[in-house]
Image (tube, rainbow, N blue to C red; front, side):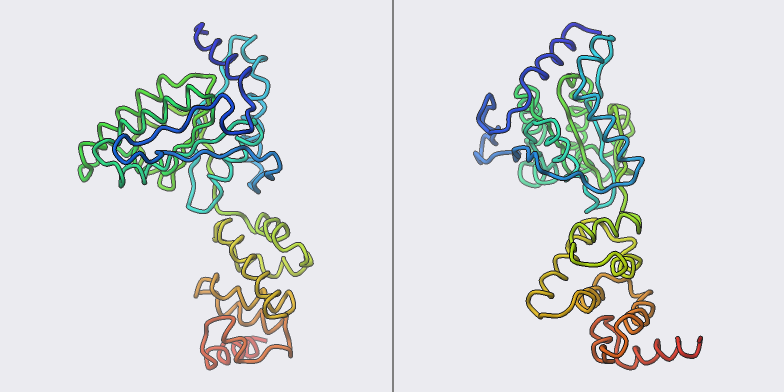
Amino acid sequence: MFYHDIVGILYSRNNGGNTTRGVNVDPLPVDLDSKLETAQIFTPNPDLPKPIFDLVLDSQIDDFLDQQINIETLVENDLLPPSKVLLIGPPGTGKTMLAKYIAAKLGKELVILDLATVISSFLGKTGLNIKRVLDYAKRNNVILLLDEFDAIAKRRDDLSDLGELKRVVNILLVELDSWPSGSILLATSNHPDLLDKAVWRRFDEIFSIENPTEENIQKLLKVNLPTFKTSELRILSPFLVGRSAADICSYANKVKRRIVMKKTDNVSSAFLELGSFVNKDIKGDLCRKAKDVLANTVTIRQLAQITGLSPSGVHYHLSKEEHHD
């Protein structure tokens, strides 16, 4: 192991855990022309709960954190901890939340650089602004999150791209190669297929975050709708399959607001808010399930409101079920 790697790791270990901005942390870099900060900084929240993911990803996260917390064990055996992690997955699946959770568990401030914003606001100086933030993160022992990474690190054979962005990719490759083992760099991508192949090889770990399974949807709903019975959540969860964790949390918040404002019961409120989250191909199933669960308390007009179907459409799907029976 190189001497500077050991020094960097020990420095990170001995100077980590700042929980208040301004303690051994420099001011964020600013764009020289606009004087605006080129990144955001978040203080770690020790009470932040662990996001709900599948067992494979859960294990990956735990292993990564264990290696960071027990860095000395690796160093004593001439090993380096992983320092660069790529978080991939559809929008709203919890990539940024995971970055905040990692920062909270390690007691380090999280600096987020939104690469898409940097491009749109500072085109022509993109490389300089990114380099200044990278240097800041290395100097201050914070966790750096490069958000919307695919906005910058596109394949260099993409002929539709500007030359400026191709130069930025080259800068990123150099920076990733020289990234110190004592610092942590995270990057998110909603479109990993756009990333330059050379970028993939620079990361130590790849965390793939998908939309929640039906089982995890029930867990998310239970956290966000604690007054609901488990049996009620089992009725709702199949209709939310394919939606992101962010969508499900948004749905739960709408249900809670309806319960408070409209004074309706849990299940009725849940069905009334479910229609806008359901794919049109399963609106018939939703119509029949709502009628089955709500029975005589729901009218054709309310079923139309729930599903977005016309009253005649509601009659059609209900009669279809009766005919099938």
